[in-house]
Amino acid sequence: MYAIAGATGRTGQVAARTLLAGGQKVRGIVRNAAKAEPLRAAGAEIAVAQLQDRDALAFALDGARGLYALLPEDPSVPEFHAHRRRMADGLAAAVRASGVPHVVFLSAPAAAVAADNGPAKDLHYAEAALRASGAKVTIISACYLQENALAALPAAQHEGVYPNFFPSSDVAFPTVATRDIGQLAARCLLEPPPKSEVIDLQGPLCSVRQMAEALGRALGKPLQVVDIPAAAHVGALTSANTSIGFGLELFPFPADKAKPIPLSCTDNCCEMPAAPGINSRGHSNTVVSDTPDGLPSAVNR
Ligand SMILES: NC(=O)c1ccc[n+]([C@@H]2O[C@H](COP(=O)([O-])OP(=O)(O)OC[C@H]3O[C@@H](n4cnc5c(N)ncnc54)[C@H](OP(=O)(O)O)[C@@H]3O)[C@@H](O)[C@H]2O)c1
Image (cartoon, rainbow, N blue to C red):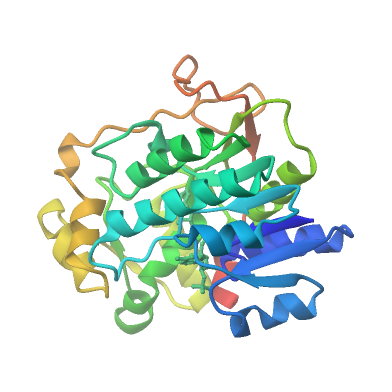
């Protein structure tokens, strides 16, 4: 049996359904059993536990051969980092207590560093806590989620604009669809590695302007890209239903001081910008996802 935390979320649902489709037993770990009803109907066992609740989570992990987990982001929580670290601590303690032998954890390239990297510093913390848990750990270091573009949906629908928080709307960077992450997570659970590993997951290069075009196509109207100046980032985010803490942490320093996070690259990811020799985390593998339609399919959901 494989345990899937965040089983009502985007990547967790895909991981759970991929395993079920392959005839595997799945236990979805959720906060709200009613929300998991479709997954239960699809054949999963459902356990209720919050990540920060070590005992409930350890109970839910009993007998699991592997666990898929992520560190959820709740921008409305004022103590954004403290909350995430409680979840990371609960998760790692439950993994240790239950003895689950393999954990697949969703992280990001920015988690390579411990500080000054916004929400990724919690991923760095969680990776370290999981590595110390005694389990074998597969880190999926996923690039920019295509579904992030959905944050622009209200502005796009109501004002016909796509806000750009990047220094340029024309520089393309790797993106990935959450569906591909979920499918890779299922594959990783089925094929545990001999030792802990980090897998870079990269997908099609896409600029903010191309995302705006894709979202516009899905909505059936062209969108105007509007650059949000660095000084207005926090205000724009906090007015978009997030806590001030989250806005500040997403942009902890002026954009002109931000350093690009190095991406590793292999010969078989020819569409990615080559950055040989900057692989600082001992990454064992690079997986290139080629889903071109993550954003439109997410809009249609
Ligand atoms: N943004 C990026 O570009 C990027 C890049 C790389 C990695 N990531 C990572 O990707 C993650 C998002 O993955 P996703 O799209 O699969 O997530 P998602 O769709 O936002 O789902 C989050 C899941 O976690 C559950 N959850 C929330 N709080 C919980 C708690 N306290 N205890 C137990 N479960 C809880 C939610 O349950 P409910 O359904 O009950 O709410 C939901 O099932 C981010 O958190 C980030 O760490 C992001």
